[in-house]
Image 1 (cartoon, one colour):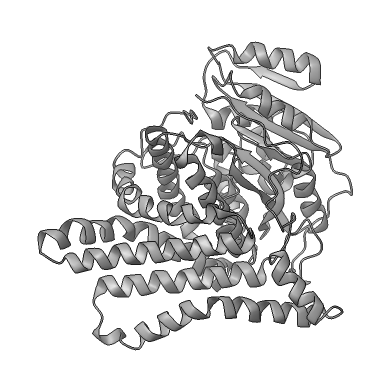
Image 2 (cartoon, rainbow, N blue to C red):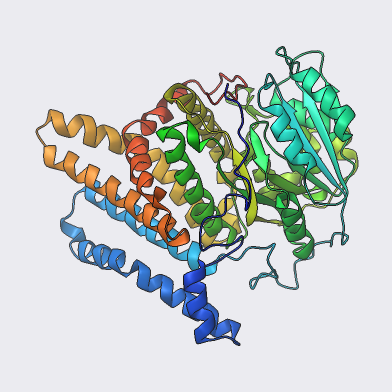
Length: 494
């Protein structure tokens, strides 16, 4: 377990030449504003053109290889598909994404879709479940209490900690006026959060993780996004690594987190279909999620309880309730969470780039591998739920979701083909080609980071994460599938 460190004093982890919600980066945005200061339509068109110009070298490579497509083998075709998907995701993320906390989105639901508005200043329940986090829990709770969002009630559930966490929470309760629930037996993170939800009678329910520290305005920005856009049933904040001073592995993950949120979530948010409202800062409308909390707590997969508190699954209930909601509520009809019956709606799910939160990432390989196994188990489980309806949400969300799923599923096959089969059969050039493709993809993501953060040299870590993912993490998917019924709540990042 690693002690959480506070973000540096002054502006909260804001890279040079950027500001919260900048989209695109200031330098590109400045060009478009000088060119078309009064016409948002022309400015948006200019932004798309600039993004295309930045992606042109990749498009040339793709077009050159695609011309030889009938003569290419399967591995090379796989590489082209990955490159095409990366280009498409970058284009969507940089040309279409808008921060819903910074103003009204350009693309909104049509008049045939009805979403009840929130009050101007809705009440918020801010929930946290913790187990054996005595070294870091105070920093987390204090950052929650420092939120400048009005009308917030903080509820912390101590899931039968044995290391003194309960005593720290009691002291903070007396000082900060938070609500603390001590459980007499360990029930797991999911059930602990559902216990907290029993006290959450507010219009908005927000979650964070026990190893996180939030910017003071992070929760307020997410709430503003929900108030401004009634069609949003949930939003995710923007997460970076908190403990970047703990070594190279943490710094590599920090740059990777930036891309996963700034690019992957931004692309999904452009279609209102973010597939995972991540745990570091997950904010939901009560009427979009409350009826499905018992389904979340009692989730079963492959004939056994699925114990992980999957952010993906909870997000799936918001995305898919128009098709799955009625059956889920019937299944849990006796639960008090279903007594207040909310209408099933085709909610949109967004991402608030300007809502900053930092999380303690694993600083050693062992904890990182365990974290990745948990995440891959959650991916597998959610694929059978969200994958059953995402095609109904339109071609854009479907392409992003199923394209990512196919990439994850194919990764271990490609790793075996290039790293085991090819060397054994003397096809070392195929292995070299594989590594070149992996490094190229990492460099593309690294350059995206460099454009967002001018002067920040950490973009060079991104190819390392691509290599690590392709050479080592890809093998974890088969193992995760074989052990998917095994689940233990362990958040240690040390």
